[in-house]
Length: 305
Image (cartoon, rainbow, N blue to C red; front, side, top):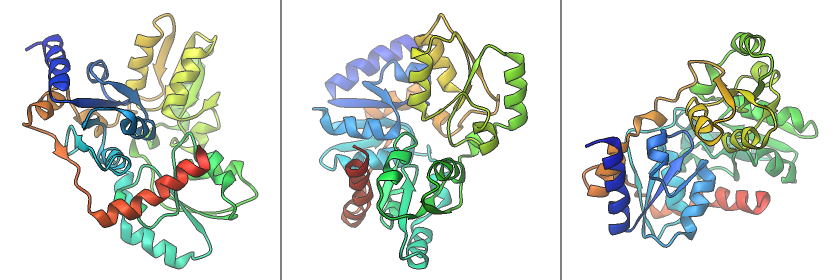
């Protein structure tokens, strides 16, 4: 079976079996071409609530599928590849978040959306990379505990001097691999290119950027900019997607190390087999987790719109 033949069969099967396929922007191009929606984890989770299909397939990592399930509890939600996890989400567990709540009782505990459902149970509000600054500015409390990304937390802290932050204690291993030296070398090699980076990158890399924003923000900026050349400081698949959406522009990956093995573990065959019932994993969360972990997500919607 060729890629095109498998894609055609996926399109047929998803209609026959009442599936909506969500493709995170870090997935490969062949998967995005058969996805009904493409975007970031939170945007896809919100869209899942609105679709008529009773079955949702997430092509991404585990915490994303969990978020979809919490926002659409009446639907059957599947993760296309069961081993696709998020190392950052796994760096902070529920027990650690619970201990933070006990240690910092006067603080608002803010969790990056890149956390497990168990961790979210002990947090006050979730944020995405695109909504974090707005939401934290809207929190009345001036004492913030931020988990788990040190780099995103530091970027927000620098823009909110009126608030006091305690930041714990993880990072995205993929974005951390891009270095200041690489950024300087690339800017020298491509002097006409704009450097666009994700705030999960190291602070010294962020300081060199022409634009800092979420994955979807980076793509939107590149697509709408009058500039013709860009250095992309986020997961490498974005370079490929931008080359398809903007064939008249040039894109360079900031570092050859900017590839997420977890995101790339999902294949087109995983999507195909999930539709056949021979693969994937259905998301099953306890009623306790569903009830408690949805609260910081609801608060995110309230504060961030």
